[in-house]
Length: 72
Picture 1 (tube, rainbow, N blue to C red):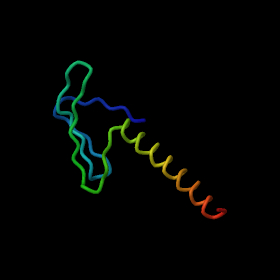
Picture 2 (tube, helix red, strand yellow):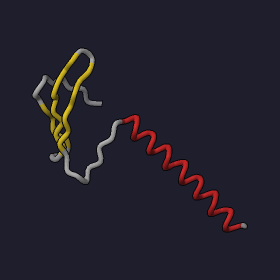
Picture 3 (cartoon, one colour):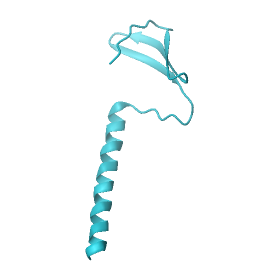
Picture 4 (tube, one colour):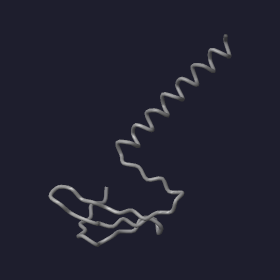
């Protein structure tokens, strides 16, 4: 993991097309702005984990249904 220090108004660039700017620092909370192409998905980590878990559950259910149909 790369750890950087940034101040309000400063930014960093990822992969030439994603810019993350520090908008506000208030206590322990940091507000950031993200500029990226529309095709780049951006998720909060907790939501991303929920999506991945749901996808795994759906795959397992589909696989079970496929096995039932195959041997049914």
